[in-house]
Structure formats: structure tokens, C-alpha cells
Amino acid sequence: MIKRITGTLVIFLLLVGCGKDEGRYIPNVLVNYRISEAEFNIRAKDRILVVPNIGVAGLMIVKITPGNYITFDQCSSVNPDQRCKVTPDDNLITATDPCSGAKFLLLDGSPQKAPAVRYLKVYRTSVGSDGMINVSN
Image (cartoon, rainbow, N blue to C red; front, side, top):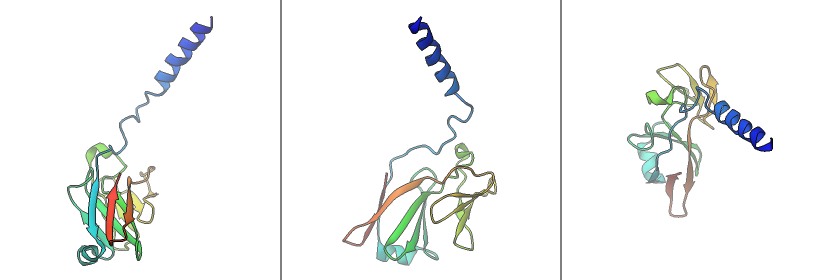
């Protein structure tokens, strides 16, 4: 009797876990990128550096305060299988997914406008004593 209940419970959990939302997350890819703060300051536009061809759809490194950075994958969390690249807005506070119109806050990647409900993918970002910005996962 206990085996039957356990088996039924396992099958139920498997079926519940197979919702249609599966596969709708930004995939994990290896990221290991380094840039000096001096080069960042030269290449960044208004404290945001877009780095193509790294991560899923490119990186956006945002300088929050001097010596404090956050890095997002440009791949929108809305329909990530489409690989739509979010781009920084003119206000430098949000970024927009051109495919869906969704908006995300560039301080933490949080969704700000529907249809976005998930955060942008964030990568670990640190500044070493050598002045190098290190982005990885």
C-alpha cells in the first residue's frame, strides 16, 4: 500500500513539474570576461558597456558607482529562445526588449514593464586589486 501511494506521488510530481513554462529560461553558458576599469571608462557609453558575442546574447556591464559594477546577459527573459537583445534606454535606468516591449531596471535586472516577469540573467562581477573587472559565472 505504501509503495503504491509513493509511486502515485512520484508520478504526480513528475507530471506537475512538466508545465509548459519549461525551457523558457535563459540558458547557462560559460562566461569568463575581463576588462580593466581604464578600458571600461574609454569604451563605455554613459557608464554602460555592451560586449557582443559573450554569454547568450552579449553582455551589458553597468557601472553603478565608482568601483561597483553589475553585469547582465542581453538576452531578454521574455521568450529567451528568440534571443532578443535588450538595449539600454536613453534614461540609462532601464533597458528594453525590442521584441516584446518589456523593460528591466539596470540596477538589478528586475522586470519593470509587462510582459516581463523574470529578472535578466546576472553574472558575478568583481573588481580586483589590479583594477580588472572580472565577469564570470
